[in-house]
Length: 145
Image (cartoon, rainbow, N blue to C red; front, top):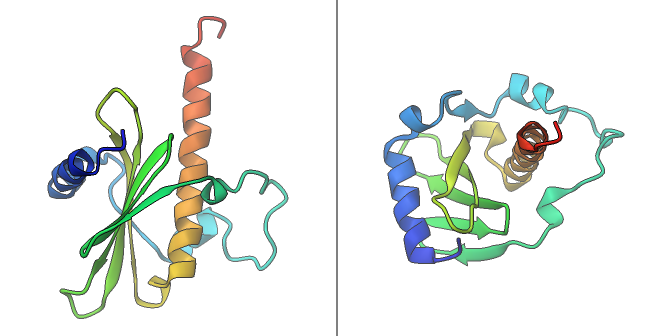
């Protein structure tokens, strides 16, 4: 799906119902999350073979958010400046071409973690994890499994 007006409607729907739509809850970027994704090392890990963010994304910038779209994912990145400490909220959905996008994860980066480099590193880690989970699920869904 790449219809921006339809994606905006899904963004609104997802934003209004985040807690109900994401069973694992909204992640907050902090030391335990960075440790979970092995992002506290200066050298990339040995299994870092598939840099998902280097795949081509169509970028749509609007006043309130940036939308990234490719054949696998739809990502909405929004700056929240209404609170005392600015934060970045990122929503990640699977992009099903003929179906409604499926919201998979959401995370908030605030304070020292609210920088483009941390947001992109955490985003890439989530994308890698989602892609791996989808690969495993596809393996179990195949008739040969």
